[in-house]
Image (cartoon, rainbow, N blue to C red; front, side):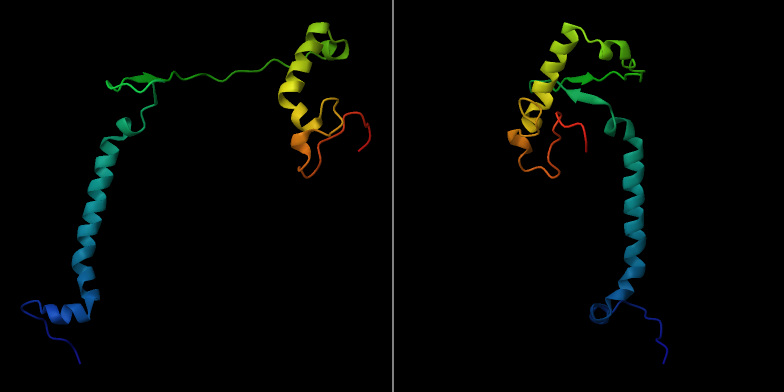
Amino acid sequence: MKRQPEDEINFRELFKDPIRLFGWVFPYILLLLLLLGVFYVNRISQVSFNEQSLGVPDTTNMKKEIPMKKGGVIAAVDLNLVQAPSSEFIAKGKVLFNTNCKSCHGEKGLGDGPAGAKLNPQPRNFHVTTG
């Protein structure tokens, strides 16, 4: 049995079969999303502006532009310096080891540092040449 077209909306019937509202609501939701998209695209330069707030919060809301940096090439390791290191090179290596490695590899590089106790796999022992 086919339904007859209705002259007026029967709200009691509408609440029993709410899927009928989809035909009326869908275009409005689509229009709302379209308008939000247009608003976003028009303001894209403000949304994605590459800026960083200054260190101290300022009531004038001043922003600092972050300059773009171009990529570069890092100099290769000088193998002659590694094979015959100078005292400055060794001192710099000690500072780097104490800063970055000592907590896991230990004072003497035996892999017995306090931060490496719970690591799996265990930190490397630099005094063992195999494995």
